[in-house]
Amino acid sequence: MNKDIQIAKKTVETEIQALKKLSSSFNRNSNFSKAVNLLSKIKGKCLVVGVGKSYIVSLKVSATLSSLGTPSVAFSANDLQHGGLGVIQKNNDVLLIFSVSGESSELNSILKYANRHNISIIGVSCRSTSMLIRYSTIKILLPKVLEAGHSLAPTSSSLNFLSWGDSLAIACMKRKKWTNKKFVVNHPSGTLATALVQVKEIMAKGKEIPLVSSKKNIRKAIKEMTKKKLGLVCCREKNGKINIITDGDLRRHSNNLYKKEILKVCSKHPSWISETATALSAIEKMNYLKITSLLVAKNKDINKKNKKIVGVIHLHHCLSRGIK
Image (tube, rainbow, N blue to C red):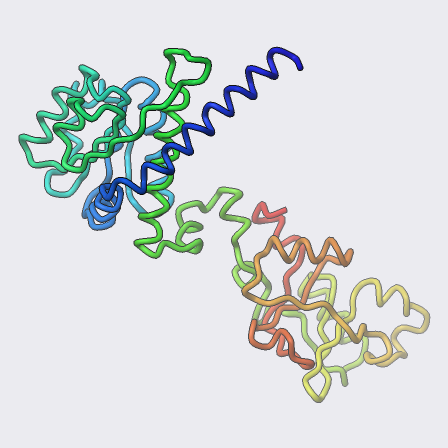
């Protein structure tokens, strides 16, 4: 095996072992739940602090906390001790500090300031006797792990910090009953959010739906189709059943078209989707069926033989929102 590949595999295996030790450590420490309790009740924000590579980890942990319902900001310890401490709202904010050794000199003034002003600290370190653990309100001791390649650079320990931070964010999310709908509100432009947009949010509805009675003539149906610009017109029968006429139907029946009745031209089995389905699933269904529009019904009616139409979703509705 290529030597570089061997090193890569050994690195991953070393970090997997570190994660296993982290997972086992949760069984021996109730302080994780204390941290979740504290963060789920704070009135302000969680300030995530680190030094060097731990600061880089804190950026990601802070971003995940904020995404999942716990307002958070990340700071380098250097920035905080040079005027940045003024950002802390006393009696509202909580400090979450990451440090492998827990002895970084940059943390000294921050810890003393927090203790002097009764600011809660969640300290995460790998040394039980460290300054960070001593000063912390909630002491989180993570297992000492072997760094990849036996190097001095933090690798496995940084990964454990990151995984522990993700665990905290998810636990807080569950405690606050944070939903995907709320996630979308905080991610209006992200691909993750657009994938969760529901059909009812972007479909044509109400007067935007091209709809005529099956008793009308073809000329009326074409006029309605042209006006609503969705490439189809819905034709309602007396019993409420919805059929459709598409551009393709018009081409197939173009010979003596205006002399034909709507029921002779329309497609009797249109494709439907629930209004609560995701727009992404609507695209997948349209691509599979090789069509550009779907009729929309309420979720409770989707399996009924005669469905009440509440909307029409067109491929362009999805593409205009960046969903593809």
